[in-house]
Image (cartoon, rainbow over all chains, first blue to last red; front, side):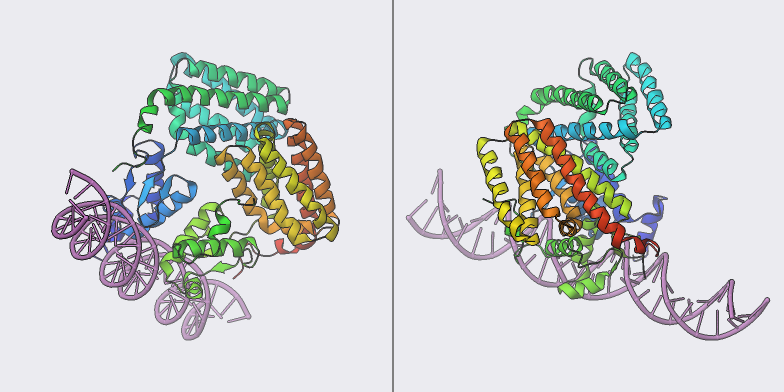
Length: 238
Length: 238
DNA sequence: TTGTCAATTAGTGTATACGAAAAGCCATAA
DNA sequence: TTATGGCTTTTCGTATACACTAATTGACAA
């Protein structure tokens, strides 16, 4: 019995900490929507599922709580953070401002190499738009923005931006399926690229903010259509 | 009026969770510099100090790791995050941008009541400047900026800004002791207030950024004087 | 029927036990 | 003298046991 956990650790070829693996798994499941917002996360149940004990599960849950992905209701269990539409919009707005802030700095600081990489990346998205390939564009989009984060040459800011962005990943994919949002998204990228090319950080910043807010607006339409009915129900189901 | 968040209310409460109290205590000690950067945090030792077992201590440490206040070196202990001067400056720059972002939104959205509260708060700082009361001004400064966060009417953004700010609190107090930084700080606040009063968010934003960068510059002088020698040593002592 | 209260119970919060890995140390050999 | 190898020690990561809280359920009275 005592030697069992060693087997569990080796089963996943990842020598990393068990608690870290659980945290990563839960992060993915929450971000992807596999774990529905508001659902209860029972420690023993999760422990059984991961073939571990409650201890690493608890650590994972507590870490997720710091990032705001789950909500710890003292002595009453942990639930997947249930965002209100207002909070989601707040997060999108914040994300928009953060992206705007990053692209402004990036415009002033990016190296010629970084600029050419960004241009190349942007041009590669044309094909995805024409194919209307949501998944490919979603992946590209991530790269595009991360490329800008790096170009700020401020690693802390890049981490903060990445953190905010990752918390919205669950909603972002949805938004791309709205109408011809992909094409518009690329057009907006195009405008941002022009401002960057001219070294006009303030314009790039404004355009980026507008770009992100457009994405948020597309999502809001989706939320208004589909999430509203949920509001009538109890905050936390079982 | 200075209701702030619940932080003050929860400050000294025995009823809360033990792991939470330990986390808060450690946060304070790290932010205040009582726990020196780079020093090792041994679990059993901390458990003894808080009269608890290792379990809540571990949870606290893991949570602090998510915020970046401590560094977990797998199976080799936890140390207080040792920031390089570069990273500290990155954080200050990010903080400056975040504050600028907040004040811009706040300018457009604050209610007349919030505006008058901010004015009142600002005027109260005059006395502290004349008395050269660093502690009082430091406390006021915190309130001033938190007041602006709230006025964004975006709770998520306020939390993010607060998070970044709290991570710099250890360094901020130092900076205020540099020369006549307090007086200059208030003058800069004054200029920001004018822009807010005129409803000019972009100007308020630019002035706020300059204000924060001035504070960072004051700190850099301090760092160059006192922290540089440390760089010659090993990243982590023993 | 409904409201209140007590007993039950499910599930969290904390403590302790144990195996494993890394760090320290000493002895021994080149 | 120094380097290296194995042994000891320390401390971490995980498991498990216990304590305590709060939700739930059932009974009883109004």
